[in-house]
Image (cartoon, rainbow, N blue to C red; front, side):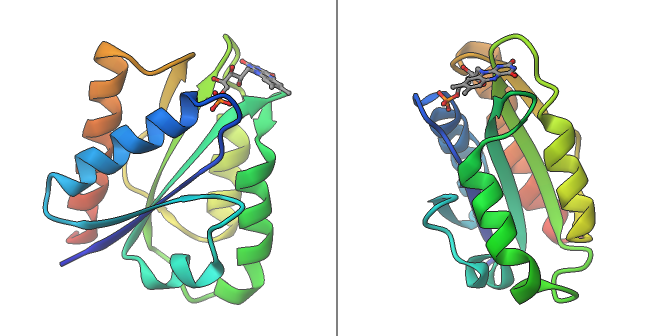
Length: 146
Ligand SMILES: Cc1cc2nc3c(=O)[nH]c(=O)nc-3n(C[C@H](O)[C@H](O)[C@H](O)COP(=O)(O)O)c2cc1C
C-alpha cells in the first residue's frame, strides 16, 4: 500500500482545509496518508513516503513559513534520496497566487517529479475547488505506480 505525505502550513485554516481535501482524495484510493503541519513534519516523513503533496498559503508572493521551515530542514537529510518522487502542490491565496512559483521552484531543487499541475484556491476551498483538491490527491496516489 502506498504512503502519501501531505505537508502544509496554514494561519487561518484555508490551507488546512485544502490539505484535508487532498488527503481525503488520496485516502479514497486506499493509500495511507499522513497529514502534517510543516513545523511538525520531519525529513524522515519525506524519505518514508512514496509521494508528497506540498501546500501553503500565499505570504507576500512566497510560500508560508511553515512549509519553508520544513523544506529547509529536509533538504540535506533527503538530498539525492528522493529523486523522481511524485509531488503535487496546492496553494490558497487572497487574489494573487504568485507563491506557487516558490513551491514549484523548491520542488525542482529537491528533484521531485511533478505528478500534475497545482491547484490554486482563492480563500477557503468550497464546492468545485474542494473537488479539485480531492482529485489532486487521487492523481497523486495514481502517480505512485507510474
Ligand atoms: C502575511 C500575509 C501575507 C499575504 N500575502 C498574500 C499575497 O502576497 N498574495 C495573496 O494572494 N494573498 C496573500 N495573503 C492572503 C493569504 O494567502 C490567504 O488569505 C490564504 O488563504 C490564507 O491561508 P490560511 O487560512 O491557510 O492561513 C497573505 C496573508 C498573510 C497573513
